Image (cartoon, rainbow, N blue to C red; front, side, top):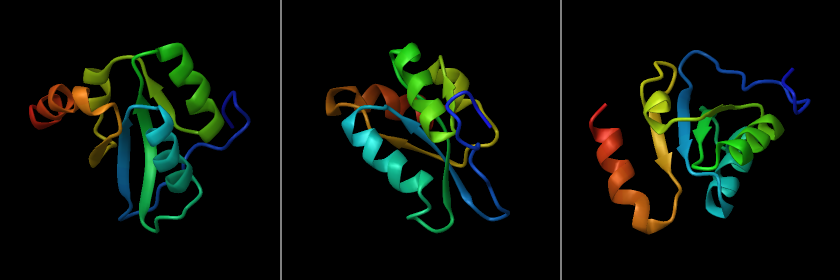
Length: 101
């Protein structure tokens, strides 16, 4: 159990392991559905937020890992794909970072 009192995400063989880039309102909606099991076969594993302190609070609530650095999250070998849920003006920079890994 993590500091927020929630069990870490349970990943089964064949699950699509996702990392969320962004933890605002839009990211919250994605995370809530993924962590509730509303998307069969998809599991939120980690997320990144520019404000790491706030990101860590959110991560504890959902049982995911909060990465302090975007590049560190992109290098994780337990993430199959990323969902970019930041404000649209940031998408290009983050998309390029994802493509470069």
